[in-house]
Image 1: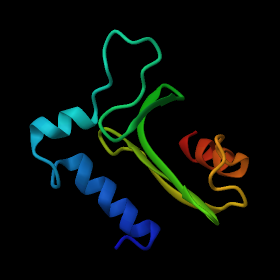
Image 2: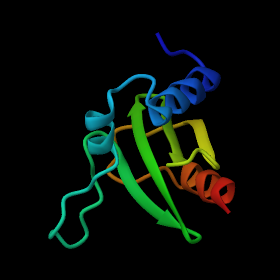
Image 3: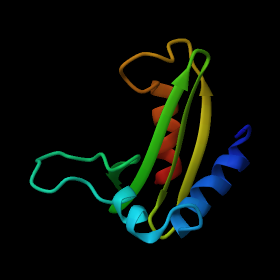
Length: 106
């Protein structure tokens, strides 16, 4: 069971380094559909460009919290955070969580 942000940091590091998934499947994790304008979802992660860098993210929420884990493909930048939420099932990202994430990526 993953219980801390440190656990999530280790998970994303091992995933991106190829320790958890064989190479052919790992490439699918970092491939978005071609020929579809605006496509940003791969097999499990979301491609996100910000500040001239490409990040691969996974977000999730449960009642009471909202979390994001992500990194650049080369792991030069990583982000793991969890924020208390009053509306974890809302369609939009928690504004506080969004400001924290974008500040960390700047």
